Amino acid sequence: MRAGFNLFEFQILWMLTVWSNAVTVYVEVLVKTHSTAKREDVKNHVLTLLNRHRMVFGDYKWVEFDDDFLAKHVVSVAIVDAERQPIDLKSCCLSIHVFTLYEDGVSTLNLEVEEDLSAANHWLLPAAEFHGIWESLVYENGVKKQLLDYVSTTIFFSDKNVDSNLIAWNRVVLLHGPPGTGKTSLCKALAQKLSIRLSSRYSYGQFVEINSHSLFSKWFSESGKLVTRMFQKIQQLIDDKEALVFVLIDEVESLTAARNAAKAGTEPSDAIRVVNAVLTQLDQIKRHPNVVILTTSNVTEKIDLAFVDRADIKQYIGPPSTEAIFSIYLSCLEELMKCQIIYPRQQLLTMLELETMGFQESNVSELSLMLRNIAVKSKGLSGRALRKLPFLAHALFVETPTVTLETFLQAMDRAVNKQMEEKANLVNCV
Image 1 (spheres, one colour):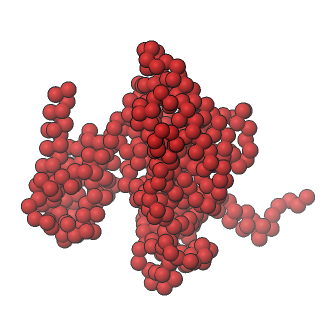
Image 2 (cartoon, rainbow, N blue to C red):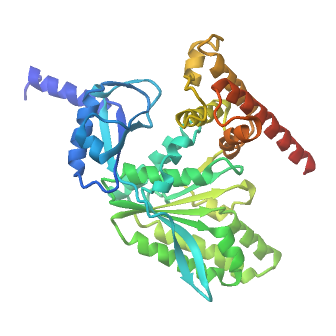
Image 3 (cartoon, rainbow, N blue to C red):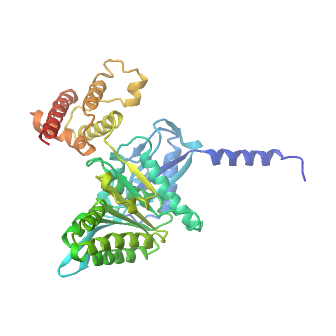
C-alpha cells in the first residue's frame, strides 16, 4: 500500500471534490414547436452561448441570438431558480433541460353515464398554457424549492427500490390557505416545472385536474361509482411509463363535506362510499413511481383527517408578504413597460438593492421607494387581487392609453386605497 497520492491523483481528487460541491445552475431551453434539431446539438450550442457569458446575476434569459442555429431553433435560453447573486458559470454544475411546449390546450376526461360527464380537465406537459406561471408566483421561505425537492425525492426513492413498507411516503401534497393565494396555480406550475426538470427521465407529463366539489355535488347518488371510474381513467394514463402523471384534486375539503353529510344522516351510505372510494384509489395508485397527487383546500378546519394523514407535505400558502408584493408589482410594471403602456421605460430597483442602499431617497431610488410604499399599503390583499390591481389602476385612474411610470404609480396608489376600502366594506357587511 502506498503512503500517499502522486500529484496527478491529488489534482483529480481535488477536481472531483470541487465538482461535487459546485452549485447546480438550472438552464431551461425552450425549443420552437416545429424544430427538428437534435437535443444534443441544441445543448452544445447552448453551452457555447454560456461559455461566452461567464458571469450572470441571478435568473437571466436570452431571447435574441447571434448564433444562427439558436436563432432558427430556440425561443429562449433561461437560467432559472437561481439566488439573486453573481453566478460564475465556469465554476457551476450546469443542468440543461431542453423542451418544447404542447400547444393542444385542455381536453376533458369523460365518464359515460346518463349523459357525458366531464370528470376532469387534461393537459399534456409542458403545456403552453402553463408557461410562465412558475415565475409569476412569489413566495417566501423556499416553498417552491421544497415542493420541487419533495417530488424529486419520491422519484429518487422509487428508482432505488426503497421498501415503502419500511419508509412510508404517499406521493400526496396538500396546499391549504385562504382563497386567492395561488394554490391551484402553484400545483400547475409545479407539474410544469417537474415535467421539464425530469425530461431526461420521462418523455412528457400529463396533468389531470379534478374538480371534486362539482363532481360529487352534481352526481352524489352515483358518486362512489364515479370516483372508481374516474380513477380507472387516470390509471390508463399512469400505465404509460414514459409519462409523469400529476393528479390535482381541487377543493379537497368537499370530501369532508360528504363525510359530514353522512354524520348528519343525509345519504349516509353513499357519502361513506365516496370518501372510502377516494382514499382507496389514492392508496392504490401511490404504488406507481410515475404519479404525484396534488391537492388544495381553502377551508383548513374542514379537511378530512383520514386524508390529511396521507399527505406527505401539508404546506400553508398565505397572503404575500410586503417583499413578495413588491416583487409581484415589479414584474407587472416590467410587463407594462415592455408593452409600452408605461413609456418611456425606466429602471426600478429591486427590494434587495433598496435594502443595500438603506432605503435612502435619491433620484435613482425615488420611484422604487414609491412602489415599496404601495406594497406596504397592499399588505393583506391576495395574490389574485395584486395581479389585477395594475389593470384596475389603468382602467379607473389613467386617462390616456400611454402613461409615464410616475403617473402610473400614482394611479396604483389610488387603486390600492380603493381596494382596501372595498375590502373593509365587505368585512363590515359580513
